Amino acid sequence: MAKPQYKRNRKTGSPRKARRGTSVVEARETGAVSKSPSGDPGPKKAPQPELPPRRQYSGDRLAEKTGLILETAPTKDYALLDSGDGQKLERYGDLTICRPEGQAIWQRSLPEADWKDVDAVFTGDTDEEGQGRWHYPKRDLAETWPMAFDGLAYFGRFTSFRHTGVFPEQAAHWQALQKAIAEAKRPVRMLNLFGYTGLASLVGARAGAEVTHVDASKKAIGWARENQELAGLKDKPIRWICDDAVKFCAREERRGKTYDVILLDPPAYGRGPKGEVWQLFDHLPYMLDMVRALQSQHPLMTVLTSYAIRASHFAIHEIMQEVFTGMNGRIESGELILRQQEGGRALSTSMFSRFVSPDCAT
Ligand SMILES: C[S@@+](CC[C@H](N)C(=O)[O-])C[C@H]1O[C@@H](n2cnc3c(N)ncnc32)[C@H](O)[C@@H]1O
Image (cartoon, rainbow, N blue to C red; front, top):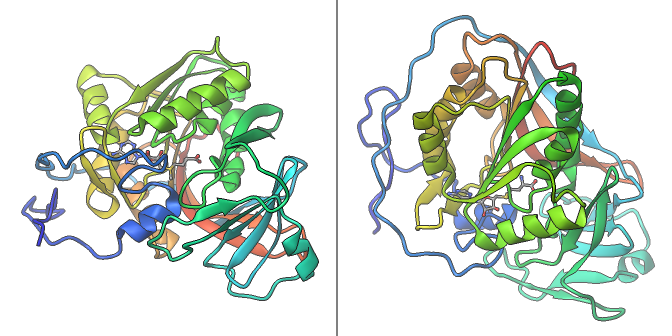
């Protein structure tokens, strides 16, 4: 059996056993697979450094809001059309797509004919462990197609593990983010960790932020750059960094760098470019300690999203409360949902917790 990596007791710093629930299956569900969501072969496992003990915080617990549901309604660019029987039917721009959706345990609302009238369907090995395949019943489709969020053009993309190059429910965060940056009326530095295809980075840059985007996958960074070009944002100040998010944060902290906006959407399990292992339950507290240290003097917002923790949003709420203790602002936590166009059902996709400064009205 493999030795546990990076495991430390919270108080004593002594090794502890790995927690269950951070399986590769979950990582694949989020697109952050051991091989990387882009299908890169994945580097060899590197020796894992020991994690330092957790930092201590003093001061008042922040004002808080829990049970917050952030909803993404159907738009002309994206709509969740229907869901049920373990599948979801979505419209991405001009394309209608059918994909597996484990949470859709109810019956479908739309007639079978609508579910058959699709441009792409993810089939094949739909076993959670399997990679599966895309099929195009009407005509052959290219790997990418044009999409937009609030006028920002990007590529939808058929990727392995049933993903489409975008997590549409993140639109709720993008809206809050662009509002906070635009209304700050001062230079804003933004850090996007585990940034994937770069949509949040582009939203931030378009709103006026100087953006640092970090992802371990070269392929995903390539896709993000393609999105930047399509969006016509090549002149915007975005640093695209292919690195392990943990290592990058440690380096930024040593350099005394700070950010006004930080986003992190870590997978359950992932790998840095040199094989550095990321295990959410082990690394997230350490990562958040660094995120706290990277806060600017007047931070606007720090958003942590988790598709991986199959528990309550209170789990990530409490760790955010801990690391932001004593700061001026509030912690808001809840879920991201997609509102279905047909029948009005709500499909829950992830949990989130965010630090929001008093300067941001959310
Ligand atoms: C779930 S995706 C993020 C989705 C993104 N927030 C969005 O809305 O489009 C997770 C990303 O984390 C990256 N990743 C996994 N392990 C990493 C690590 N150790 N350091 C940096 N990035 C990593 C993967 O390459 C992937 O692009």
